[in-house]
Each structure stands twice: as C-alpha cells, then as structure tokens.
Amino acid sequence: MFWKKKKNKSTKFDCSKCGKAHSEWPALGYISPDNYHNLTEKEKAELAILNSDFCEIHYEDQIDRFIRVTLTQKVNSSCQNLDYGLWVSLSEKSYSDYKENFNNTHHETGYFGWLCSNIASYESTSSIPCDVITKGGNERPEIFPHKDFEHPFVQDYYNGISKMEAESRIRDMLKKAG
Image 1 (cartoon, rainbow, N blue to C red):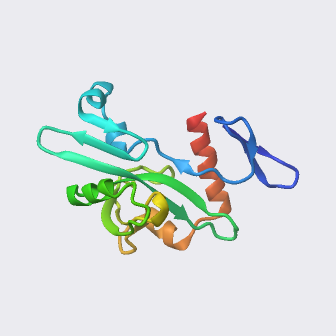
Image 2 (cartoon, helix red, strand yellow):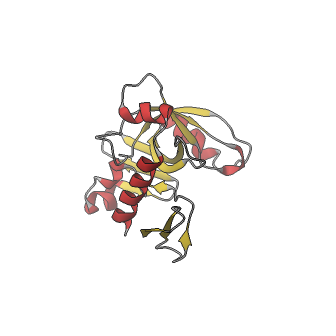
C-alpha cells in the first residue's frame, strides 16, 4: 500500500488487498496482540490460539486472554476520524462472558481491559487501562482509555490529533504492511 497526492489535495492510497485507490482513511489494524506477536514461532505453535477475534496464550501457570476491539481517534479540524483495530486483555470471567455471547446480537455490556497493542508514534501503549463496551449487532467492542491514566496516547485520545498526524500514522502503518 502507498499514498498518492492528487491536485485537489485529498489523500489517496492504493490498497494492497483489492488494488483499488481509496480516498477514505483505512483503519489501522493489528493482526494480533503484542503478547502473541512477541512469542517465538515455536511458542506460537505450542502455547497460543489466534483467530480474527480471539487470542489465548496458555502458559504453565496462567492463561492470557485477548479480544479484538476498535478505537476511534478524533482528528481535529477534519470531518474524518482515525479508526483502529486493536487488542485488549480481559479477565477470565469477562473473556468467558464475551465469548459465550459472541453471536448474541443483543448482548451489550462493559468490561475492564488492558490495551495490548503498541501504537506507532508512542513509546509503549500496552497496559493502558480501558473500558471495553460491547455493541449490539455483533460489531466489535469499542474501547475508551481511562481518562485519568497519564500517557500521551490517552491525552491525544481525549484532545484529538491533527490531520497531518493522522495521515502520518496511516503512511507509517502502510509502509510496514507493504
């Protein structure tokens, strides 16, 4: 994927999946939680289970549980927001409840979770406390970082980022994917 600037100053990118040019911003998605990503290939094969919505890592003394979520970052002075596809860890009880109700289109609740995706442009965003809010209609849950947690990402989430910063993050992510 890469970016092309048009004369009308709107940002376009060529999608590596479909090959078409898009003018909307893509969501910045993470394929797995960092905890999984940091495992060796052998550990992934022996300890972990990963699909597009769930991840479990089975250690000798514990099981770490993760779900795929979304986060919408406000972009100041823009009519678009920047969307993320991230991962959070949940307690055993919350994970079990979410998994049991995964196909229930009317299940709406909230959980506590820890962000488990390191977002580019920040030193470390793993372990930011979040409220995880499920949505009806089987949409992925949305997360809301705890406002009182001292971290630049949390400040940016509540104060917004510039359009230039959003486009820089997209370009950086597309370079990594390309």
